[in-house]
Image (cartoon, rainbow, N blue to C red):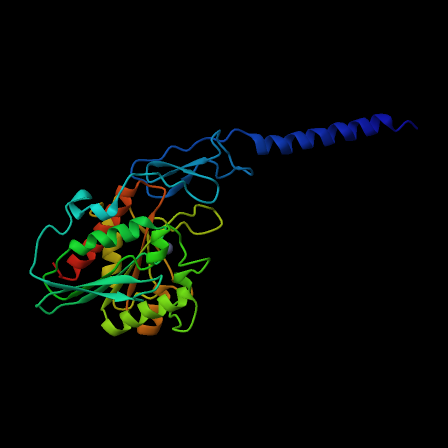
Length: 321
Ligand SMILES: [Zn+2]
């Protein structure tokens, strides 16, 4: 019996199956247009097996109405000409316009070391809450420490305000996440006075927060990673435990959703990772802590604005202005 016709039929069927399989992977992918004011992340190649890479090597995502370029893992951070040391709050927006009588003083952490940085203490004669702002434990998250530096102009009607900026001064100087080498300050808390640079800095910051006993800690950060393997942390507020700030946290989220503050709605996430300011201050000191994450795919002005808008909303909420 001649088996060839049967083999031809099998080959033809196999070829057809392979064609169907390939055509699934190479089907043109429709680009989803963002709906007005939609805050969810829209991926234009969500169903593709292979990412759609544009000519310039970047893929494009629409996030909060803006086309964001990314390389499949990190967003492309737009460049800018900002010289933050020569700027003031009014360059970014109408923040902290009312002026109150306060006394200010500064003190150093890790004086004389590579990690030396400064805390500004804003003191009002009127009794009130105490807020401690940690401006950027990651030095490449510029909007976080830019906002904290500008915040030094703010005055308060009551209470105490501490501003540590930049928390990771050496990282900020070198525009790197790390303190030095690959030492991540936000995995080093509560720190160790005998440890490496990040652990010694973490120890100094942790002891300072512990000493000042704030009623709330604000931990300013930014996010750049954009991948389906991990939570998107751009435009989020992170908490480890809401105890003591339940209303504040939800009203803050609602204010972004209602368009009262910030350029877009913020989401929430938690808990903070092991060794972070958020997780450690919350658990070890029982102090409510909010981590603010703006998104580095947006322009610097939008990011610094949203950081300041968040801090101002919280100080207003606590009756400190
Ligand atoms: Zn960070």
